Amino acid sequence: MNKNELSNSVSQTLNKYGQQKLGVASSFNWVDDPRRLAFSFARYKFVAKMLENKESVLEVGCADGFASRIVSQSVKKLSGLDIVDKHIESARETLCEKWPMTLFAHDMLSGPIPTELGGGGFDAAFSLDVLEHIAPSIEDKFLSNIVLSLAPSATMIVGMPSLESQEYASVLSKEGHVNCKTQPELRKTMKKYFKHVFMFCFNDEVLHTGYHKMAHYNVAVCAEQI
Image (cartoon, rainbow, N blue to C red; front, side, top):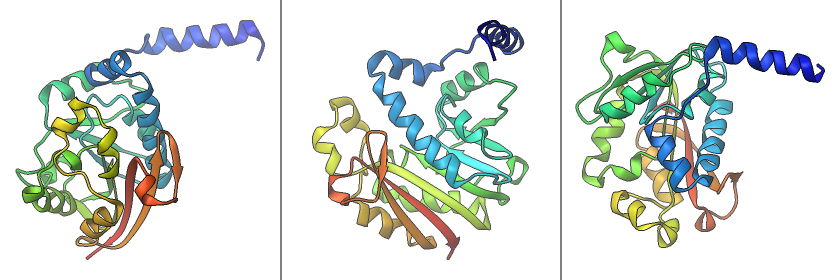
């Protein structure tokens, strides 16, 4: 493809889909700390690879859906929910028809996903940067309602900042992080719901299986419900 062909291809794509815009959450990150988007993209890319070709995937806590498109690219159907109405409104406003998602507001503490929205039939779910905001006293209700929304053979992925990382977290982050865990604690939590739990670490955008006490972010990949 020569320079003119490339230019024409870009113009055709922009004419068809329009110039893309950031949502409210991603706009804040782009202004406040642009590197945060790189870290988020890396986590979503990992989820996309783990859930590749899944039929129906649920994201719990999609915010404005900006990074969700990375997973949408790899799965057959993606549904995203968030408890904040403004986030879902923003996600709908910035949705691209090339990468469709079903978006709705729902509080996982209120119950599982209704059957008319796919509840009970999702063959995978993921939740990134959400569990640390759920108080320990109600995390079982939160996680149980997600599991009840899944098919029995479904896969689930949970990612959250490590407890060790909180020494270096910003004041704003610390205010909302009421339930950070060490990697062994996250594994123990997810073993209540799944027979198999595989643990991974992130430091910035780098994925690894190294010493968990030096990890900034932990991810649990779970399979086979108990």
